[in-house]
Image (tube, rainbow, N blue to C red; front, top):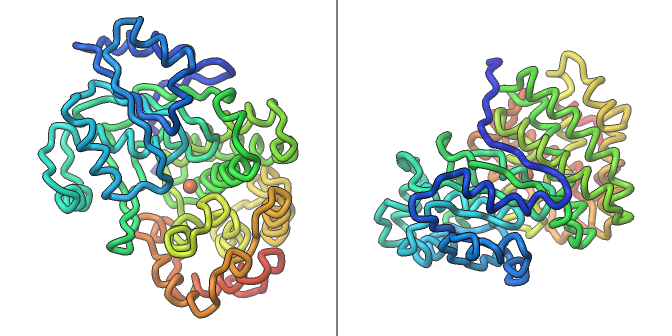
Length: 384
Ligand SMILES: [Fe+2]
């Protein structure tokens, strides 16, 4: 498969969030009904959002604070906003907000009396044409959610990670303004950057990889890994690079999806509380070691990562996590060794595990989890 498709207009650069009103006018809305979904009240005081009402838009704003949104939280947000009948959802925040914002567009116009009916809708994927459009304004450089047509919604009650996915639900535009991400704590900035790097690496070797996505992925990896020291030092140049790199990674994996690292990481986040970026990045080295056999030429990927082997990548990620003040092994994150077999079974995420270029099964995952249990800097030959 060599097809590449992504219809999202991308606007990037410092201060570009100021383009929001102009973009909304471009959308030729019938009534100008705009839902602003933000991660904290202070964001609403930024001029670009304050001026929307003066520009003639009917604005409803809602603060959504949760990370890793659940089916229940999405349902509550739908209930709180459906009577406003937004024509556009402007989602301003990290991946969780963007995922909730884009999911809402698929829900309006459908009568959902309770969270179970929403759960069924997500399972059946019978959204029809989205009743609203959306604009993504990421404030963390990491998820690339602004340029993908799917959203991760968690379902801890059913021990599952769900995906709201609709090819007609790409954003009208992505406004990638690094100034919005500049105030992020370094731990979150690094975790988000490592997540973005994982998106690009996994896109490079995913089953659906193509020439365009590989080009985007390599440029994303070079940009992100080349500015990691600057990010740890908090430079504005690094924040700009991360915003750009994350978007490029998003454009790459919007067509290929992710693979084993993401598949295995979901239960680590849901059951062990390990932040997404840390969880996926700890898996990069061991999964690269496994997948190397499927790569005709691993050199471009290794060069972009700035390493000579998967083992060196594991050590590099370990060092970055530690320098940002985060644990770098499952043991340090508080995971019990006896939990590993269950986590390995849960790591077979549909659509991700089966997208890995080398087949994986729970035994493969268990071997990988053992490698990162007490030293992500020391790879064994298992899975090689
Ligand atoms: Fe991710």
